[in-house]
Amino acid sequence: MGKFVKIGFFFLLGIALIWWSLHQIPAKEWTKFTLALKHSKLWIVFPVFIILGLSHFLRALRWRLIMEPLGYQPSMANTYLAVLIGYLANLAVPRLGEVLKCTILAKYEHVPAEKIVGTIVAERAFDVLSLGIVFLMALGLQFNVIEAGWNQLKSQTTAPVIDAQKGDWKIYVLVGIGMLLIALFFVLRKRIPKLIASIQKIISGIWEGVMSATKLKQQKLFFLYSFGIWFLYLLATYVGLYATAGTESSFATAISCLAYASIGMILTPGGIGAYAYFMAKVLELNGVDYTLGLANGTLQWFSQFLIVIVLGGLSLILLPIINKQAK
Image 1 (cartoon, helix red, strand yellow):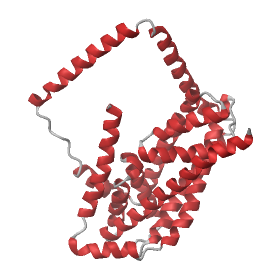
Image 2 (cartoon, rainbow, N blue to C red):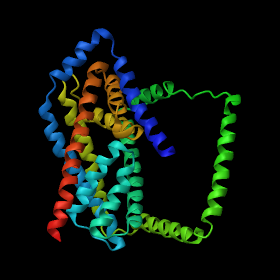
Image 3 (tube, rainbow, N blue to C red):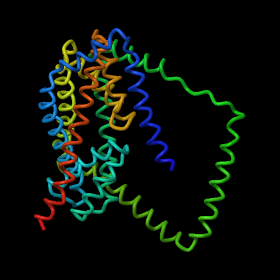
Image 4 (cartoon, one colour):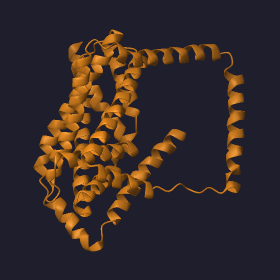
């Protein structure tokens, strides 16, 4: 229940960001917003489609590389399709795709899911480091823009004030949870040793998967794939800036857009609302009208959403067909 509440909260946050960002457009600017979308260069979606499809392919290659020290070499087709299905699942439930693509390989390639979950943890840790490098590049190239964006972000984030007297219900909830746990202990006490053994096995497998990143046989290739993934993300953002008139910009601006838009992708499911808003604010700080920036951010977000829907949907169809033929 807590998981669904959290998912629902961030989904509603995305909807709220869409509503709020659209209401930042003055009434007299609505025509400009709709015209920017109406006269956008939709053909740019196709090169972005290819660029992002290639970045997902490099991600699949990198994932296979991390699995090598564990002694597993799943087929490239299954790995790539699993990655695409993972992105599709993440649109609905954040981080579900990370687990789902592991279970897909466990099913079709007969590899232990708990071990390759550890490789995903290692990948995500490196992605966080890569995002940090992108922010450092943006700071070096556009320090004033990044500083102004960060100050705006802080000023618009307000912590809710909770009345201490209204917090009594939390005590009752904690007591209720405690009583439930005690009841479960007595009901399941005979199964606890097996449960502990299962948990230990899972933790051990995940840890082994995480440590596989430190035992790479082809470290240079791993860094090359990682550079390629983020360079393609940057290229897709840069090309996407040319989709609407008045938002064409430099690689330096694209780096700043990528840095903040990546936060938007993390903040809400699939980046809904947040991605376009952060893009618009960064472009505004670079002298682009907010309305035009929001139109471009909306179009870029929709392009990525469409790519995941198409490629992920095709992967769902192709995965059982390919493996049936292989058998």
